[in-house]
Image 1 (cartoon, rainbow over the protein chains, first blue to last red):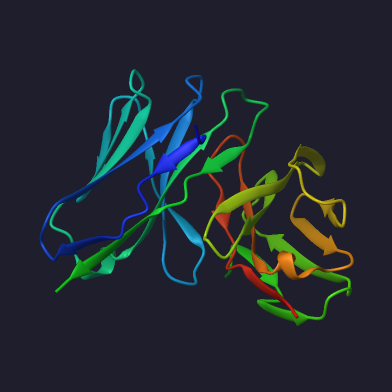
Image 2 (image 1 turned 30 degrees about the vertical axis):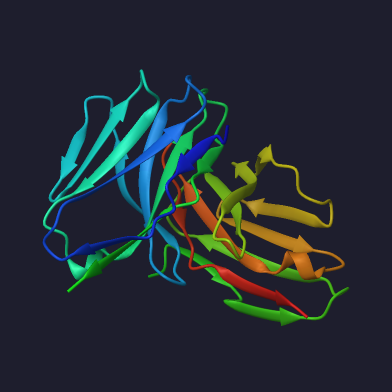
Length: 112
Length: 111
């Protein structure tokens, strides 16, 4: 099983719709989780951290399910500018283990 | 002001050459990283330094040698370049144990 697994998509979604992605991880001791977005030919940028209780930032909601070892990202009222690749990131279990493992990304295209 | 800056942005070179990529961060972070993103867009960590000390050294060929002269700089030197080294190399920094902030990337093409 891959350390971090995502559906590569592509997800083609009409503007204004709601879309959700999941990401599964294999190490049950993982402590930190993030969603990054990467535009074509650009660097990854932090979208949001994922907290145990779930968290929201505007139209974006991130959730963590430790029992099933997955995190999710929900985008409401999607905009054309949301078109990007969304990368799930999982961080090692120990303070001394700074290794972040990236998923291969889910490609999202918002259609006008 | 650019927070994490890498030079050069593009690098085209012949097989067998030696090249270096430089990275500097002005965020005051204590940890810096090199990541490689291959043609399939898979992003994988290569090295990480914390306060000039190597803390992550993934399985990469020893032709790749990082150097951190101070905690604001992390350079990557590559010897005897091969076709398979073609990729985008991202430098990043973070304040331990936070999430990394990435530079704009160096697109390396080996011909």
